[in-house]
Length: 339
Image (tube, one colour):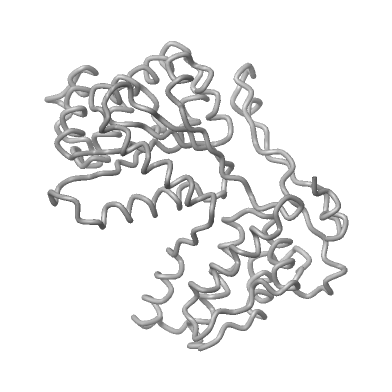
């Protein structure tokens, strides 16, 4: 295997981490900005809920927003305007607060200093003080569905109450981010009135908004490290890309990223869409390749039901319901479903 040059590495990293902004993402980041502005008015902090199924781009959006805001000089060098954390896999009140402290840089991976700070209340006090010191303006907590799935109602309530308390004491709004069933938090009395904004990130759906998908492909093509953007929006190419990804952003990016990587490693100045054909075969050797089919023979599937969670189930295995996609049908039939 030929070694990657530094120039190739720079090009690939820039593309693999690129962010393609479209209207819904602009609106969501505007919601984040508004929460940060409203916190200065005092009173109860407004909060937000952002949900979306696996691969819809939630984490990518959060990373982009955090890096964008962190890179803007706005005062002290040690300030952290956006704190991104997550619900820990080892779920408890103490571990939740420790995770927030760790993500603020207070502890290393082994949570050193834990022997000096042992109680939940002192941990929370330290966190509130650090949030003020770091001038945190917004807390984004990812994987919030982990809390919803927790079986102990009493402990789940305690964690939800503690997050509300931290938001109030530090004067910092919170954005809860998670899978579709994270919206069950809105049923909790202490959160229902605070979640003033509720958003979801859907998959692309040709039956509802084909223009949205094409616009995204155009935006992504402009980010590619070639002399001119390829015509990903060409009907045959775009329909093949949708067939390959079923409208899931992560699957779409994996395929395109692989094709771009191969082209960059071959020092190609222009992107040949035939690369997508080769990458699909490489990544899905047992699946019929849509890029080798005539347009009228390509069959498409798109999301019909997102994954869900039944809190009354006896076990987590029974509680989780998988997302459901439509049957594979020709483009004309899929577009007839519109409306």
